[in-house]
Length: 141
Image 1 (cartoon, rainbow, N blue to C red):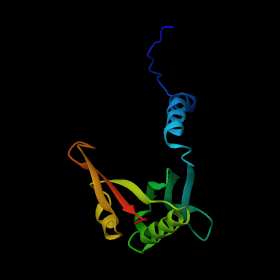
Image 2: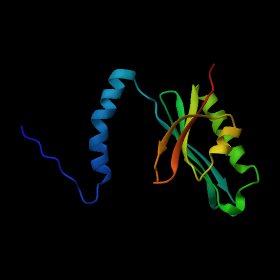
Image 3: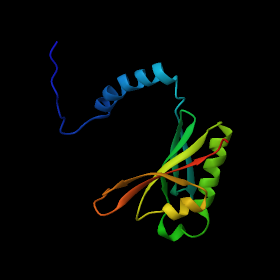
Image 4: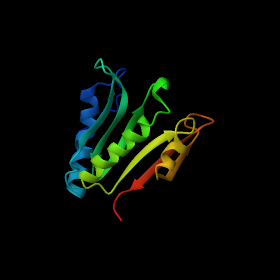
């Protein structure tokens, strides 16, 4: 049966799912169920609006922190540290071996290193002229 390579102008969630399905099946066959679950810790104002927070997912015994964002007005008050400490507690309670994340050169590498994260990779020219850093923190010995 011949196959074609196509490039949808606007890829859909169904397109993503079609790509993910065989990868997920292979991964499960090789390493077992990753037990993926989302993690969200929100910074909520008294009026109930969400002003920022942390978003990630646990899978294969590691917490990946995908997003950590706070408005400028809330920075420097310890909220970022509190979010990371809460995430670490969630990861420990879930039995995670560690936490990993990425950050750009113009973002918060130093912040994460102060919290005990170590560099395990860098991607130059992402964006061009800058770097993207990958950091981790082991929770298990």
